[in-house]
Image (cartoon, rainbow, N blue to C red; front, side):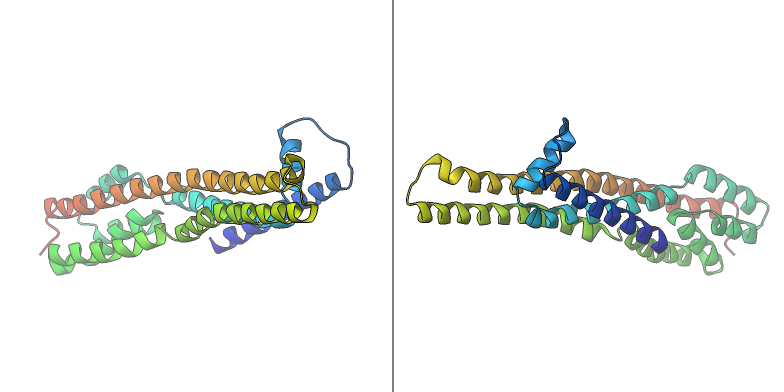
Length: 244
């Protein structure tokens, strides 16, 4: 999974440098193109692409973490009903090792937690429950890995935008001081730059927030299924008289 994340990061950074190159070409006088993309490029440059690059980096790195989490969580999703039914069949045949092997070969945190419970059958239901609770906390930490970075980029992006706004307003007032005139033409350029940085920062935060909410809902779904399976496995063990 680390290799996958590295590849995603390399891909997004390569895309970023390609985007910067395209923006630089437009800045030197390339012909205007119609469409939303061209408009975004133009506004990106007008907002000061040297400063706006930091906002773009937040978007790229945030998306890299989001994509990595989405792929990981989709791979971690398990059909718990089918898994419990298969475990029930093996325990009915008194094949505890077969049930353990089934959990080992099934991907996802639910199967890992159930495997930990099966390993502690000899200790009785109390030992099984303790093992499931303890290992479930470990799996929860793994599921939430990387969320703190996504939250960081969600918070930083609008802050960078607001910082650009403040810098733009300072430039506007400096321009007023130089010219000695408070006309709209004098301050319009600085105010436009200030507003553009704010807009782009908010856009990045909104995009990442949507992905973040999806990831959190996915984690909640997996956690709910894992908790339900953890309760059900004890009943399955008791039904098949595996506790001695």
